Picture 1: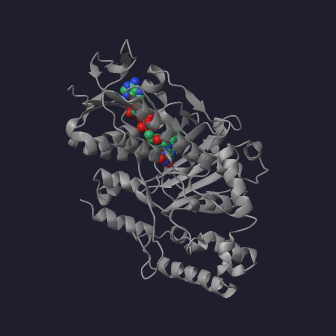
Picture 2 (picture 1 turned 90 degrees about the vertical axis):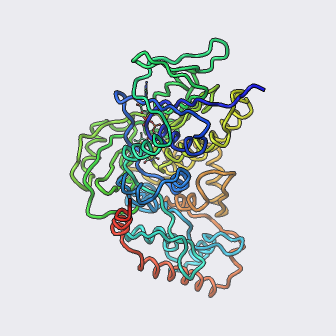
Picture 3 (picture 1 turned 135 degrees about the horizontal axis):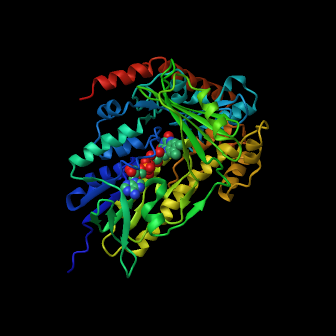
Length: 503
Ligand SMILES: Cc1cc2nc3c(=O)[nH]c(=O)nc-3n(C[C@H](O)[C@H](O)[C@H](O)COP(=O)(O)OP(=O)(O)OC[C@H]3O[C@@H](n4cnc5c(N)ncnc54)[C@H](O)[C@@H]3O)c2cc1C
C-alpha cells in the first residue's frame, strides 16, 4: 500500500505564529516530520503582540516550556485581566478580570445573587468586582500562583502573561531548532503550484533555492503570501463593525507601578494599550483613520506615556476581518495571514494557539480529505465570529456622546448573534456559552455590567436564600477574598522571585 503520510512541512514566516507552529509541531509530531521554517530578516515581523490570555499556559506546558525560564527570557510579567477606562462613559473604569466571580450555588450562577441584592437596594452588595479575587489582587498590584483560596471553596488566581514578542519568538526558536526544525533565512519570491490540482509544491527564494513540501503553513503575516496571494483565498472585511484600522506603537520606560494587568484607555476615536514588562512598557494607540489623523493619534499616545519613550513611534496598518477559508488545498493559514480582529482582548496569539492545536488534531495525510478541511474551516470560523462579537460589544455598548466615533459605534447594527445575547441579558440576566467559544459567561458579564448594562431581572432560583442568608453569603465571600488578597506578595516581588529561580 502506498504510504500517504505527510513527511515535509514548510512554515512560511518566523513571527509569533511561525515559531509557535514550529514548536508545537516538533513537540507533538516531530519524529516523523521534516519541518522547515523560512523567514526574511529583510521583511521582519509585525513586532507587537505582547498581552495574552490564560490558555497560553496550556500551550507553554504542551511544548515543555519551564515557566521561570520563559518569564526570564521574555521580560515577562503576569496578567490578571484588562482594565478598561472611558469605555462605557468618560470617567468609567472596570476590569475584565480572568477567573470566576463569587461562587455559584447549585444551578444558580453567582451574579444572580448579586443582582438580587442590588435590586433590593442593599448598599452592602457592593460592586461585582468585590467578588473577583483576580480583580482585588490586580488592583492592589499583588500576585502569587494560587490555584485555590486556602480553606475555602473558592478558585484562586487565574493568570496569563505579558511578554516581549520578539524575545518570545527567539525563545521558541531555540527550542524548535533544538528539536530539529530547519530554519532558512531568505525572501520568498515565487510560489510554485501543481498544474493539475493547484496544490503548492514549492517556494522559491530570492537566492534561487527551491524548498519543496507536502503541507505549507502560511505564517507570513498580513501579506498572506500563500493563502491570499498564491491561492487567491479572499478576505471577509469586518471594518463596518470594527472600524479601527491603524495603530501607532512605542516602547517606553515603565511607570512607578508594575501592574499585573493590561490597561485599555479609550480616547476620541480608538484606545490606548499599556503593557508592563520587566524592562519596559509596550504602548500603542489603536485608532480609526477616518476619524482622526495619524499625527493626532501619535500626539495622544506620546502625551499619555507613563515613562520616557525608548524609540520613535511607528505605525501599523490593518484591516479587521477574517480569511474566507483558513485551510485551502495543502495550505493552512495561521496568525495574521488568517485574519485580524484587533488587539483589544489579546486574542490573536490565542487564535494562533487554537489554530495550530486544531491542525495537530486534524492533521491530514496526502489525500487531504475534503471533509477534514471543511470541518477545520467551520471550527476556526465559529471561533473567529464569537471573538468578533465579544470585541464589538466593547465598542457598541457605550454612552459616550463626545465624538462622532463613539456615537457611530453605539448606533451601528451589530451581528444578530450579539443582538440576541444583549437582549437575553438585558431582559433576564442570563448568559450562555455556546459550544466551545472562547469567552466564558463571566467574561461577557463583566463587559456588559462594566459598560453599564444592568439586567431588568434575574433568575427566580436566586430567591431560594432568605434576605438574611443572602446578606451573610455575600459578606462571607467578600471577607474571604479581602483577607486572602492581603496575604499575597507584590507583583514585582513575585516576578523577581520567579526570575531568580530560572536556570
Ligand atoms: C497593533 C497590534 C497589536 C497587537 N497586540 C496583540 C496583543 O496584545 N496580543 C495578541 O495576542 N496579539 C496581538 N497582536 C497580534 C500579534 O501581533 C500577532 O498575532 C502575532 O505577532 C503573529 O504575527 P504573525 O506571526 O502572524 O506575523 P508577523 O509577525 O508579521 O510575521 C510574518 C513573518 O513572515 C515572514 N515573511 C513575510 N513575507 C515573507 C517572504 N516573502 N519571504 C520570507 N518570509 C516572509 C516575515 O519575515 C515574518 O517572519 C497585535 C497586532 C497588532 C497589529
